[in-house]
Image (cartoon, rainbow, N blue to C red; front, side, top):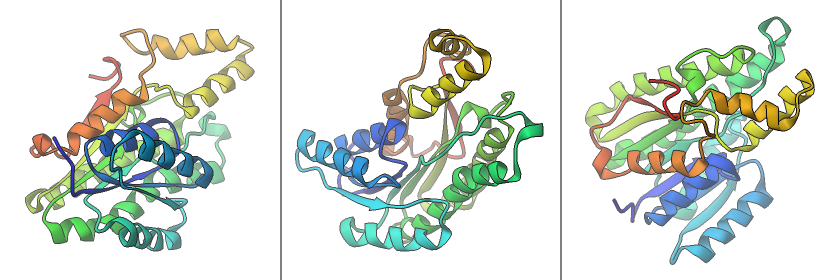
Length: 259
């Protein structure tokens, strides 16, 4: 399952699922570009990976994926450091919670810009390298919110449904070109986004943080929160040669919440 000789770009790599994915790919031998907005955290992760993994090739490129003019230069910088892009993990994302009636147009557009348009822009930037090589992997981190509805996150859910539609359409376009395109759909996962959601619920309902957290746990039939490493393991497999026949899929990593 080696990824030696492959260059992977992971967006939103500074923490949570992105950081776990970057580590999982580096452990399989991939050269990894850590992409995101937080240079300090990205540099810290790069140093950790170089320390923990022998001969790890890691670079850092700062990018806000919703900043369209900045995407191509960022990918050019990544290529200049580690070569053509073979694997892309579109992990950068944000979540906003509000009733639909109180969701502002700015919030709606922010969800689409970061979660959906950012995925489109980065995929478009990476695709030429994959087509030239006749091999590639695109893995989009969507959400169970892209497979079902959740109250009070209409904008977020719409953006993640869009990511899955993009995944399926592109998978068909490149199916005969050695490139697979898949989405991974985590349930509630131990990330900064979850912690923010717990604080938001606690503040709005007067519940304790522990009681608010229990509400998120209840949605998982296994009665627990998904861990970033579990999501990363799924991404790692999808990037391997053993997953060459898996494309256009939206894989739920949610303890059975979505089947």
